[in-house]
Amino acid sequence: MSTSDGLPTAGTPAAAVAEAAVPAGATAHPVASEQVVVLDYGGQYSQLIARRVRELGVFSELLPHHVGAAEVAKRKPKGLILSGGPASVYADDAPRLERELLELGIPVLGICYGMQLLTRELGGEVQAADVGEFGRSKLTVTESGRLLAGLPHEQTCWMSHRDTVFAPPPGFTALASSSESPVAALESVDRDIYGIQFHPEVVHTPYGQDIITRFLEDICGCERTWSANSVIDDQLARIRAQVGDGRVICGLSGGVDSSVAALLVHRAIGDQLTCVFVDHGLMRKNEGDQVISAFRDHFHVPLVAVDAEERFLARLRGVTDPEAKRKAIGEEFIRVFEEEAAALADRDGGEGARFLVQGTLYSDVIESGGGTGAATIKSHHNVGGLPDDLEFELVEPLRALFKDEVRAVGAELGLPERLVWRQPFPGPGLAIRVVGGEATRARLDTLRDADAILQDEIRKAGLYRELWQSFCVLPDVRTVGVQGDERTYGYVVVIRAVTSDDAMTADWARLPYDLLEQIASRMINEIREVNRVVLDITSKPPGTIEWE
Image (cartoon, rainbow, N blue to C red; front, top):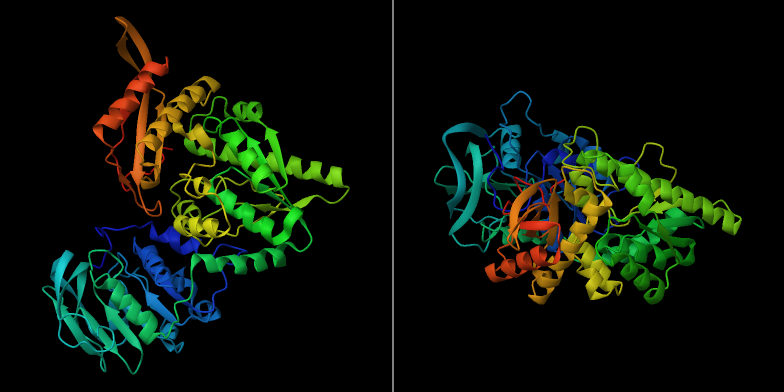
């Protein structure tokens, strides 16, 4: 059984990635002169393959394995990569390889399960081994061939499989073996088909990027000219083509995603765009004033500020379920946008805004399930929380990008460093950080004060840029304490700080003890309602970054 379980790098539920790659009614990728398609066969880390290809300067798109050869051919890819997966090629319900994919006239690389599929389809021998191979393994290269040319004959690689290739298909050359894999790499230069049993996308395969580079550059002939910055010109053209002379409204939160999306659209269509900043009372301390000042005064973007705290708190009254919170907030956002669009129409005497800009990222789409059959981890307000009767056509210029790529686009657009590197903040705001209880004004104020102390100390320590996110959680729990020789019954504040590259996986940050002591001391001394501070040391997986 080939599986990606146990790989040491970023990943996400495969079904969600696959369905997210081709959202209904939208093209998920920017136009690229060259690209490689990655077909997802269920590997938890299939997305990482696509990221590695992008890092090497070639645009990649992750598609579900069942999309078919015709759908792949539409993209005119320079190459095709078949991912790993958890199934056995002999299982009745295992994903299959469509033979037409091998007849598109482009090089094909199978990784792990992908190699086993190629081997079985083309007449080689795949069997269940007596012993599985998981983790680091010694790879012995017996024939460098085209794929492994220039690499050491002895090297380390990362394996994660139980089924094993014992003989290559007719006409193929076995290139390498490992302790438990008689055939750990194979190729047919004549057919332009290649396979490796190990995972080149993970950091524990030291020559993995060299292998992917050789496939992209030497075998597929890609020029490696794509970068996140190259998205800008393409998206400007796409936005203009989609919007025409229509009016556009943008929900601006001040986070890097919505800020970059807003600047892209403003550069494309100018004052056809009106940004709406909704102060829902769920933001961090003084954040609303900072957002308004930056976009009105610095960027001169048309901006309407809406004080909607009361209506959001009313919608959240009595709501404790996290999904219900997210959906209520997402729906209320849309209702506010609709009202502002109508107000703009009344003011200008026109039809009002028909388009809504959102800073949806690829990871948002993935975690929200992205389509039928996909696993929903949690609904993002700009993906899974949208109401069915949405009256806008969505403009989502960042939908194909990961967070680090969005930051690169923001820097290219001239976004100030403080905004470019602002830590992610959830669309539903602090409401989902009041955990297990109702997000009342009093609880939100307590959480706001605690978060302000945390951010202040993190910045003083020079750690802000090193962390993916740092924030506080306020559970609906009170504990007994002793302050000033008196018994107290106060809230617990949880400190959550993580490191990550893309939020698909995250590790808890090892903050210095003296910093933690200073943060806890300030919170307990300065916030009357708090008498205990704890640290969350859960990584993702098994947890998520946000608690709700």
